[in-house]
Length: 163
Image (cartoon, one colour):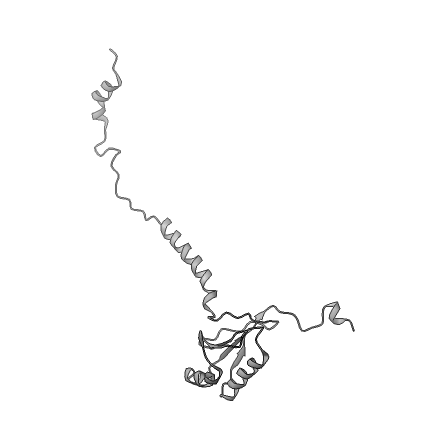
């Protein structure tokens, strides 16, 4: 006697099934870390891109010199001079007449370092006036900020060495 496929399942299929069957699954006890890794990589990329932009608020084109990099100072005052001669303390524009009183009110003592970031196209006169104003105001730690990797002061090129 031949059985059809339906008869074979009907006759013995119910006895062979497990009690819990394949359709049910137990609770998943593993943590899926893929979304966490995705979010962390996106945050890492965002911080890597935005971190260099947070160092200075006023855009200036710094001159390049062969001077080495300075060590980080915890809380300096940053003074920026743009190519058109405007002066900024932090990100706020300050007239030259109000520069010394503003810096004195910001600094509790005259030993707090001041970083002067002057655009390479800024007038030498305005940079010299700002430096003189800082010096006569009693500030002793005044630093000029430049880009590293500029031309060397030694005469290594054939054009410079020729008489």
